[in-house]
Length: 345
Image (tube, rainbow, N blue to C red; front, side, top):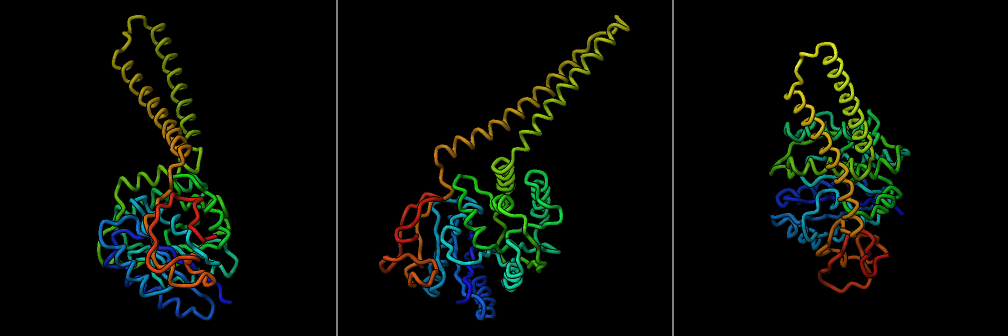
């Protein structure tokens, strides 16, 4: 039997683009039908437009499409995790909903898996993002290298393919604040890149704002690395050493020339500098403690309001199915990882 490919797309403000994206995927997977079967999981991250209505229509039209509607906006990575809990495939493919990730490159990513890689990321030679998004990508790349030990020659993006055991390993992460790239890097280093073309965005604007990018960066290095704490310790040690040297300098200067006044401005500068650094370090430690507290309280990665499309095919199809479901749609509250749907083992 042909291998099953599960394609997961987090959706936000994509009502105008989604049908075209799905059509592109269908054409590419038809070209690969001799080797692969496929399913598509569309996760609506509580988009304020009618994105989920579009998803509902697509599920009614295509039996191998499953729609997941989140109760509120949890962010792209939480939406991906919600989709991962629905996949049945031997291979996973993740891509964006804006049409900038070319569906005709799915075969190239899958070929990389067939050649032995655990994960294959798309590499864009020329990204068609605005300057703000490109700057954010560069900062994110530097953060991944320093905090998570990403190889310098590895390009990571939101368009990638992975083997099933990587998906299973990512699903073991049950805490809030998921970070998919961190989960991949801690599971394997057998990763390769495939160069693909990055398309222009046909309509709409990116959902990423400065606040969301900052939150993503904080999530990456506080959830998957202790290096910020080590850096804080090093900075604190350096500040203490500089303060000690400055104290020696002040004493020696006073001994050499007793008439030299002790400067109030220099004292205030030292106090402000050291006080600011202390507040920075305390805030960083507080960030870690706060996230630990939230995780101890079992904060969900996501909450599913509704799942549609799963009743349209039989359990043996392995396509977003759930045995024992009656006709129509299924509405439920699902709290993040570790909660399986009734009849879905």
